[in-house]
Image (cartoon, rainbow, N blue to C red; front, side):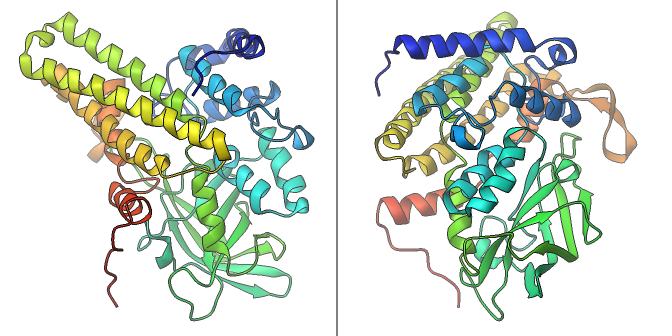
Length: 402
């Protein structure tokens, strides 16, 4: 990857930086440096308003075609946007599934009618989406999906349950992987449907996390309906479309994520030196290992972006990167608690937690608790290792139980 930037790219960085400084004002000032891991330190409603502010500046769809409301930025510009955004300590972003997952999926697999109907409201911030993949018995293994959809006249009728639905309580729409083939099993017979959330047949139950927030939810479908044209791809092609969606999950923003990790590690090292914990050889060695690990992560991210720039197809580096960053950040949370010592175990008043007891968590405590989930969501570590082993190293596939 070429690390030199053209005059145009330097001007683009300055445009991003200037816009952020001019718009992180008023109520958004309180978001600066917040809303990161766990999101619990910022109301979701305010983060959603910030997404709309970004949309007014045309920053939601930087990788989308201009013809549909995007900026059509090059891959280098996309990387520079996310990197500059994090360096500016701009507000943490909500998991905007419409922008990062559904929009690119529709551009790749959707009809022209679906693209023109759904993508512009996503890029304007007017419609928020959530993801309906995981179920109680189908987490990382989507082939075990039980939610069913039956075509009745001009509508699909859904029945079933999804779980870990991020921000479902605020979403206008949900993209759902459901079983439409009768008596189908595993990957066959799945379809990818776009379903409105505001209807009688959809109910939501928040899942209270260990950090005290409720970003995730259970979503229930009881004769929920959506028009028959709201199927992406052909009936029974849901697995292919769903895998396409997941391939968009890790892309240009990964280097910005790495910059954010560097900021967190720098804060941790400064804390260790200020409190004298740096003088402990075990602590110092663990911090050094974390620094080296972050450098390895950075170079893998650059390798992934180089491959993406070469042919536009996400490669094995994405699974390697997910496995690596999830484990690294979980370890960073553990390191924070090691450096903090006993103070890391003490919470303050102001937060109602288990059994109604009131206490609050600081940023480091939230990082420690929330990062435990990194190695599970978005494809667990075990799944990533299977992908790397089978599809990259050519190892025999994992035996399946009959």
